[in-house]
Length: 269
Image 1: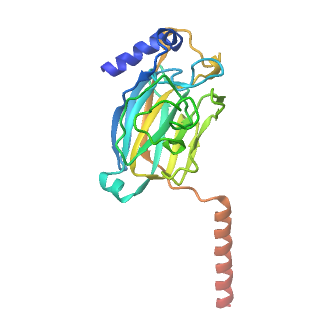
Image 2 (image 1 turned 90 degrees about the vertical axis):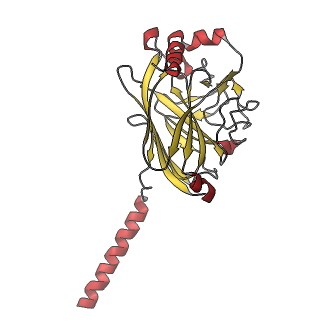
Image 3 (image 1 turned 135 degrees about the vertical axis):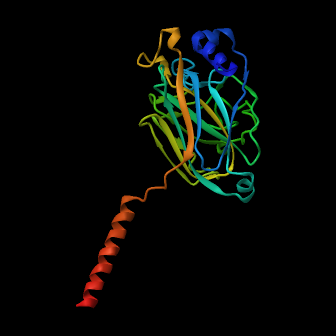
């Protein structure tokens, strides 16, 4: 087992409650480099504690920096970044193996066109805000992520809906930054895992925080057997399917085709 996986397995065995008693100091973080996505699917198989993306106590429900999994990702080639090109990208988290992560979530932040620098010191994180965005991370530096709301890109999760300590609703499914200059749209799903499709995603650099979801110490997702705390998952980055046309557009197209057919029949007659 790799050292990184071993450390996370140990953290899972200790449990989040134990860890909170061990240290209340700000935690620096390191991030595994997923490489560069240009269209070929990237797959990461790993392990994470069952409540590392949402826990931190009843009605607080932040993520834990020192137990979550952190990844860096370059979207597009260097030439794509320079040209400002965009891609349609699908991010998906699903349980795997004998002890699957049944309820998981992940958040994407961006450092724009500057390569993401892991590090910084903070103890917990808000899943739906950027640094200096009025939340728990206000005074914390998440690497070199863009400061403010535009540093946050989106999230997906297939666990319970909850409200975090900043009063933000984090629903089952997902959401994306609708005012972000780094994307044009998105779609989210909690079927078969947690999936976030981002359309028109700008080539650049992204940070991903990932972990298990168990808010409000809910009995339905709490685990008491320490040997089950560490959960297996598969995280993939792939090309998103084309944006589906709204039903109204299809109806309009169908009407136009019918009208053209009618006109053609009149000409023939």
